[in-house]
Image 1: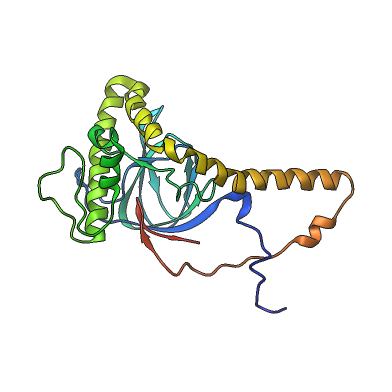
Image 2: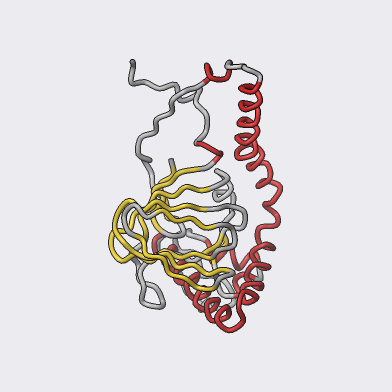
Length: 253
């Protein structure tokens, strides 16, 4: 059999999900720990498969703060609303499986910046920017503060998110789950303009995949096998390019 694959004929990754390779940042943070930005997804469950190194997954949600050790072959996932942060204790590398392929790229990710950066969409976007030389943005930005390179901007963005995360931990410790309400409300308002696009992405991806399974089950119940002749193999090599993600250097398949 030829090693060539008919990529155009093959379908998307199972269930309308997406797969990425993540090399977690080893940059120091305001609390002295090394790792990535703290953030939450509003409509997507995210899963981790640890493939190298070690570290911790810090989470903050309805059940409060938790730390989960990450070692090779650990599998962990969390649903929308769980604020999460990766701590890198050495060479932490992860395969990420994300629900609703395309929604994370469409903005289903809100970082835990301090409240002043979340209350205004322009301030939030300025704080998110990785443009070399971009200002930190927001009411707390010092005059003349600049990020010299994209990596500098990513580290500054990460530190700002960790700063807000540490404040949220204090609020949850003091007030319970209601301590997250202000962040959740601000996050929902920030993504509101994108929701029509999110719906289209979901309809083309996860919903279409679920409907296809429904059709296949119905066909099999009727003794029909035509869809089995449509099966194809898809093989992807390692991603060629990486980008500066929220938690580390991200390469999407």
